[in-house]
Each structure stands twice: as C-alpha cells, then as structure tokens.
Amino acid sequence: QVQVVESGGGLVQPGGSLNLTCAATGTIFGISEAAWYRQFPGNEGEVVAAIPTSGANYYSMSVKGRFTASRDNANNMVILRMNSLKPEDTATYYCRPRIDGVVYEGKGTLVTVSS
Image (tube, rainbow, N blue to C red; front, side, top):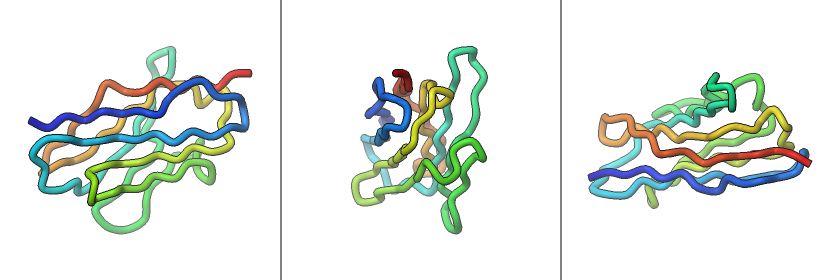
C-alpha cells in the first residue's frame, strides 16, 4: 500500500526559508510527475508548483523565483525549497505525486510565516 507523507513545515520568520519533503513509501515503481498544492486558512488553495514527466516545472506567479520543486527518483521523494517566505505563504502544503499512474496526497504540513 502506497503512503505519502509531507514534512518540513513549521514556524518561520518573514524572509526565512524552509524545505518541505514528500516521501512516498510502499511498493513503488516510480513517480512520473508531482505537484505541490497549498490550502490557505480560509480554505482557498492553489497549485504552487508542478513537476511534469518531462519539460520545465510550473510555478504559480505568487511563488515564482522563490520556490523550487524537485524530484528524487532514487528515494521516491519530492522536495519543495521555499526561500524569501512571506506571511501570505502561510498555508498547509500538500504533495500530490502520480505514482504508477495514481495520484496520491498526504495529510499536509503546516507552514506559518510570522514574526
């Protein structure tokens, strides 16, 4: 059974950095693509980054130039590096990897940007 767990969230000051990790466990042949989605406290959400099977990553305008998404195929992990964090980045972040043709999602990790 495949499980996806996000980690790395926490409290950080404006201008700080965090690295989020999404680890997939179970019987896995490969992660073909993945996305990072965030849900704001008011329940609105957005896709902030997407890693396609091939080609360039997608980033939302709100995070472009500050966030970098990558995939570690050897360890079945997806990573989101977040720099120059702003209070408006406060949200619960979810990873959505497509594993062997199926899209999974973990329980998320909370990022709070506040002084």
